[in-house]
Amino acid sequence: MKRILVTLVLLASVAGCDVGENLGASAPKKERPTVNVPAALRQSNWRGPEGQGSCVHASMISLLRWQYRLKTADHWRQTYGDGEQPEDLAAKFDQEGIRYAYVTNGDVRFLEWACRTRRGCGITVMGGAHMVALVHLDDKWAAILDNNSVEKFIWVPRETLIAEWKASYGWAVTPIYAPAAPLPQ
Amino acid sequence: MNKLLLSVLCLLAVFVAAMPCLADTVNGVLAEERVVNLPQDQSKWYVSVVGNATDSRYNEIVGWFDTNASLKKLKDQVQFCPVTSDTAIYQARYAGNVKALPTVRMQKADGTVVYEAAGKYLPMTAAGLNGALAGAVSTAQGIRPILPWRRDMERRCPGPCPNPQPNPQPQPDPAPQPIDDGGTPNVDPDVQAEPPLWALTLVCVVGVLGGMTAGYGRKLYDKLNPPVK
Image (cartoon, rainbow over all chains, first blue to last red; front, top):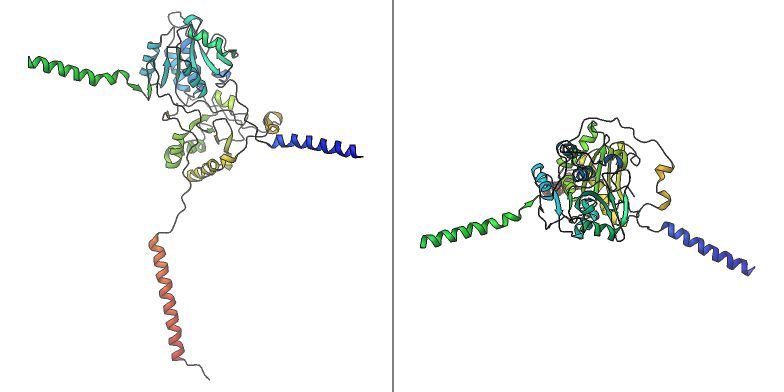
């Protein structure tokens, strides 16, 4: 009889632990990737008037839409295209009155800031021949949205991504507006 | 010789004055290789106003954030997201989790909802909405995130969702907000209407005079009408 009682007490205490855990304040589930651009907002790459790819513009358009600059994004899609250089893109942003920030020195802090503030940024890859949107960066992993294949995010180890970016002139650029609100928790 | 020296000095002065312009800012962010003043606004809260672009009630509520001083101040402290139901971002991130339109939702930076009201449950006035948001902010520190068993309830138990009519007219982009770091918003609490000081004084004086008059009148009455013994 004593054994049964002890067993019951132990079971009750274990059950109690479980209930307590459920009532406790568990941390909100973090959205991954941080910049979770919906499929309908992702801009695919296209050939510009000179026949070049428009990966820089496509990345900027996806980020503008994520930051709810829908009309600006449409205008950008209709106005600009082809390959792009950092200074020329900056001049276009200035001309259009768009708030932005960029680096060309491979400063990782910029990438961390862009993902920490949920804005994301365009980053160069493939030796500087291509730009994709960086949509997540944590201690271990990075995620990119490639405008040549916008169906899904591509996850790569953080250090792999950073090494690739630094070997590609280290250009990163993003518009600066309010990002989409997080999913409700 | 003096003129030459003067000219050189003038040129130097012009050069020194022009130097800062080379590092001019574009809306608070240096458009150069070395980027400074990036907003560290990852702790900012979010206020979403969601509705149909053609709905007058939705437009009225969005307008409150420009016309009501307290809500305007709040708008500048948060990531303000006016979202219309004809957009892809609404379909992807709001359609499945709003109860009705229009909806006003305030969230912490991690997504925790601290205030949400929709449809007929929305406050009727800007002051009412400000008061509700202020109350939500003040009680938010003790709020707990949604319990695990309640997560994805909408998906598991689908109920009636708002079914807005798409509006093909493109909406203008919202006005950009100030760039700053920010954090928990500071919402002005409701100001209770208090009677002015002169009115209180007047009430007191009238009361004293009334009392004195009543007392004197009673004495006079007793004097004129002595009790029959």
